[in-house]
Image 1: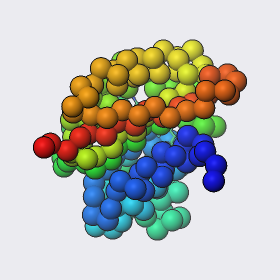
Image 2: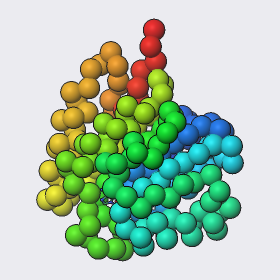
Image 3: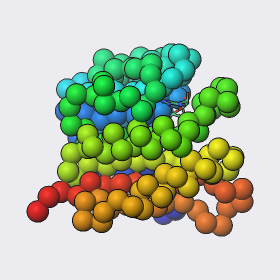
Length: 189
Ligand SMILES: C[S@@+](CC[C@H](N)C(=O)[O-])C[C@H]1O[C@@H](n2cnc3c(N)ncnc32)[C@H](O)[C@@H]1O
């Protein structure tokens, strides 16, 4: 047994939460690792919306999905995730946001606190009771630190009778390592 790295832990949560036929969204498609994880979980009878502002990111994601034979259940949307409610027309069981910039891409095209919060709030509104919203945050660079602080403040203010919020990260690593916030929308009683 070992403590999973942050992204691996996020994928384990997605695998535990999603089942065949579910709907899900990826707010930051990037190179498509998270989109592929979602697509595998929901299968051909499910649906995944994946957003990114960069054409290169969506092209990389499309290639990854095609190579894995999981392209057909995914709608790739080239637009900012803050507009996701214009596209996602069904309740979702999971949403993933892996913030920051495209690995290997333009570091200036990084996610921003104000649009990230709008997108997270929109995704939470679409989440089914029992569903999971994941945010991977990168406080190691300056914009990422502001974003992480803002997102954490937003998450910490969610009423505890409506959501459970988990923070997962390694506290003894240098250079402010990435961490995960996982929001579970509680089922109504
Ligand atoms: C860390 S990467 C995502 C990594 C990806 N999930 C993967 O598995 O490879 C962050 C992505 O967010 C995208 N991005 C930046 N601002 C955005 C916005 N407002 N809406 C959607 N995507 C955005 C960037 O283009 C970049 O591809």
